[in-house]
Image (cartoon, rainbow, N blue to C red; front, side, top):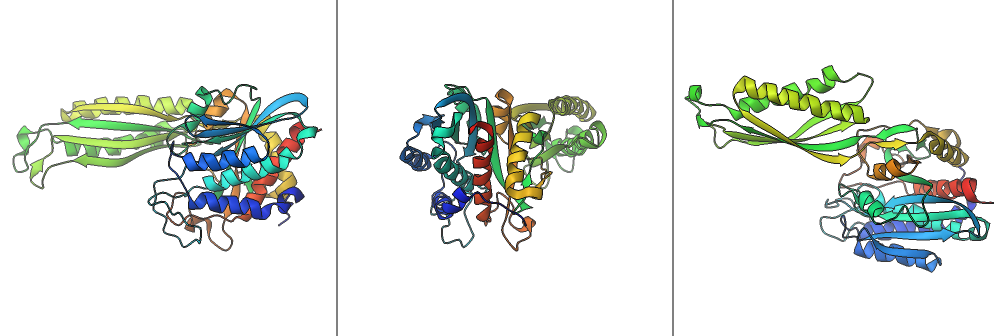
Length: 392
């Protein structure tokens, strides 16, 4: 495997790994990343950067300005952990009860802090500026949206933005990257079915909410199988059913909760339309009252072609032929909010631990870990990208 880690990154390898392990040991949940933010800000201040704290409550931004005018490039890392009790045996495992970094955000911060350390040494040769964006609450809290509202893309205005996600579904030494949609929109729905309860032995005077719910769950699956172009990925998942009182009581109420996923806004809207149509039909068929509430989640994450090409070219200088089509999923990311405002690219750095099948240590599992050498790949790509874009 022909990986060319930047020599500046090699020189601080131990520091990058030390940062990752420290952050892994002390994870914090969304919008509570107080100690994490203090640590990140301290690292950036030590480099002499202009540092803003309390952006979107716990976010941190470091600004590196070169002597020559030029574009402002945003580099983003997320900071929050997950509400999971860590069960692995790492010597630096989480000491915070029921909180752990189970998705790689500790590594994202370490890679970006490592890059900041190196790029600060290039300050006098930069034609433009770099914003190091450390964002809270990616795991469902929509921290990016609040960072934008607090002006993270302004003063100076960010011209391009990039994000890296460590990806255990890809082998170490690979970089998954593509233009267009790379992660899905993720919306939440709650369906309430109201029937008429009664004795299980006397069904003729009832409206069985469980039977209606059962037909509805089955009918919703036809949206993907019969309304979506087979070449366009969509998902409708009912993840929770609540209803019923006892074995011999016909239920008068059932609540369904689930998620819809789509790579395009057109499919997102189509799914919602078809769900409403199916709900009306099932309600009439069974004589039930059925209502549905949709909660907007993250939009699809869509990479712009020119910036994807720039990121891919930088990655090729580090991993060569390891640049490939990414392992795709219907997961969602609030990097999408930045990419709605500014052209950019979000891509994946393979981080599967050596000798382990990628399926054995998936993201969001209680024994999550990464190949720490992937941190050097990520930092190297960050440095190379800035080198290519604004270093003279």
